[in-house]
Image (cartoon, rainbow, N blue to C red; front, side, top):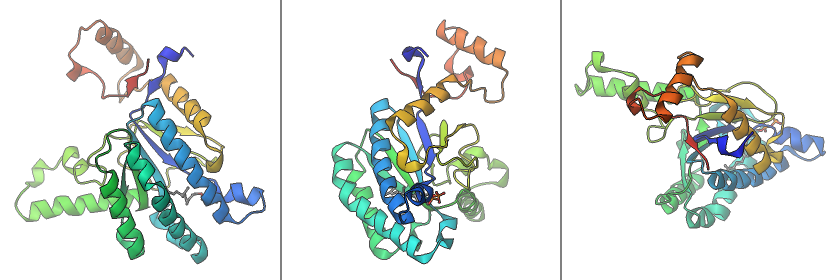
Length: 267
Ligand code: FPP
């Protein structure tokens, strides 16, 4: 493909799967795979920033991951702690804004403090804005949003007939970010696993057999190239989208009639 045609997604969301299998293939403990997974996280942040991706959301720990063996859960908590400790300054220095989505109150107090500290330290970042989904579940997010909307109704601040998609969207944990354009899952499975259920409504899906510790800049480029070849229709026909893009490049239609933003064209 001509490099000029590469479309960079504004927001990429990733399910980082395959750490355990990566380790098992090498007769190593699963936790070793998670450690190598942190290296992939670092590489991916750098690569996304370099490519001009604006938002990155990584699924680090699902609401269901508590069911894993106790020692694996505790190793993951320690790993989050040490990764945050070692990366905080470099994230801030590179303008990466880091925040967490999910019910982090269930985490050990020290980890919660570290999370708040890193969020504070990086909050002025204007390069890549990154979210880590931790103790996160898409259903949990939607239920929370419904509770928030119900609260507004019960306090008289909102009429039932005024509840809209926008009302709900504004109550989700991702209220301050555009929906993902590209969803990537490594490790060969083809499912969402209760990730951003609402937010992925119109995302393009990319599945790769590559295990997360092997995911690198090249792999990210392949995913972005696959994304670039997709035609995002948002319910319209392919012909309508073609016509719109011709009219739009000829400057004939106002931007309000165009399909929702699909990312920016790279040089
Ligand atoms: C899934 O692989 C991976 C996880 C549940 C943990 C992911 C966490 C990291 C990569 C660390 C990230 C750290 C920060 C600070 C963001 P799996 O264990 O399910 O692999 P398997 O399917 O091969 O068993």
